[in-house]
Length: 175
Image (cartoon, rainbow, N blue to C red; front, side):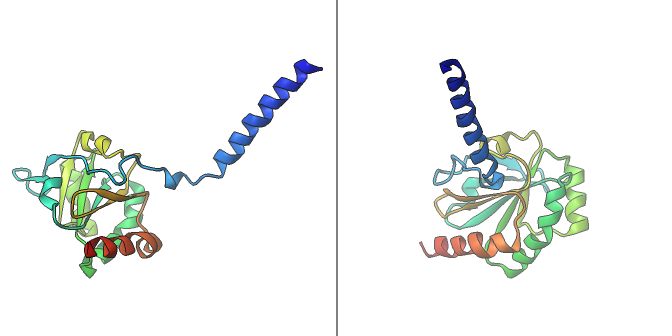
């Protein structure tokens, strides 16, 4: 009788873990970079590769870093939201063109509109790895001291802007 109880107990425990895991939201993967300094980088600008862009350039202002790519289907979903946000001039949006060919990224921005103050080109994906990018799109809210305060996994939506991103930006601007 005892030899059947232990396998049953193990099965129940494993089933419990599975049940809890299936109830989690994959968009809410906690980032170990929240409340830590944004990883340093210096990358060529997409529009002018002779110029560099770095996170250090942004010290002293609250800004968004949006990781995107021309091949990203979900990026097309969030693009109108980012265009509208950039027109409102609430917070500067900087792009990180991730694992993309320069010509493809430029064509995508030319055809769909460019919401970014500028985009940097991360062709080999090293900076994306440093930022813990799971997949594109992802958006980071970075404060005046260069600390990551929020990470949006997946497309930015009107709802995520209104409920999380813009209230946080407003709060960070006051500090």
